Amino acid sequence: MKRLLVPIGILIVTVGLAACGAARSYRMPIDASQARETFSPIATCAERKGLMISEHPDSIHVKYDETAWIQYMIQNEQYNMVLIVDDKAVTGADLEAKFTEAQKVGDELYACAEQHMGAIVAANTALDEPAPVPTGGACAKLASCFAAISNSLCAQVQDTSCETSFKIEGDPDDPGCQEILDQIPMLIQPYKMAIPDYQTPGECL
Image (tube, rainbow, N blue to C red):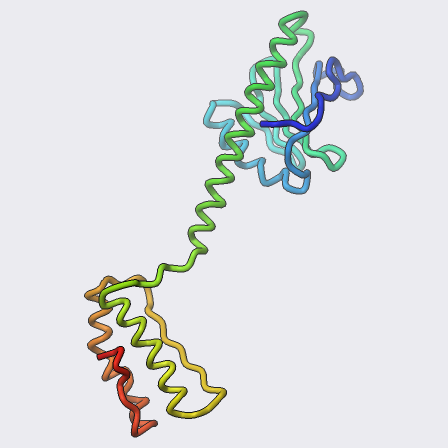
């Protein structure tokens, strides 16, 4: 994950965090307005790693181990990843190593969350895509037949306000479409009664 800013509070944040320990904060690569969309995927990814989570309205906290937390937080209209390490239990060179470990896991969790969010978007996009138009066989013929009926009916009544529409329900196979084609003479019978000269379009024959 690429970051745009240099770590903030590079050593110890004393205001309000003295009881918690040393902290470092990293700016996340998305706007704070989108931050909450990442909370649930982060929780899912953390749970897969067996990590404990704590969810809050403006943040989600992941317990890395007994000495460190990874917190994804909305702060002052920014979205930050905040690492907190118990500097009473972890000192000296071990403190720096702990921050490095926690940052790596924090990056991995966020990358996992991005993949999870991408999969959801792709699935929703696929659901929104229209069904493919048949290109051959009985279903293609049925689609052409319905289009021809719509056009010919309005042509017959000679009314500019005329509107007709037919559609194939579901996703039938060719035998199913052929069955509907066989029923076309019966389906258009009401139109023949209203328009005595109406003829079945050639596309339906």
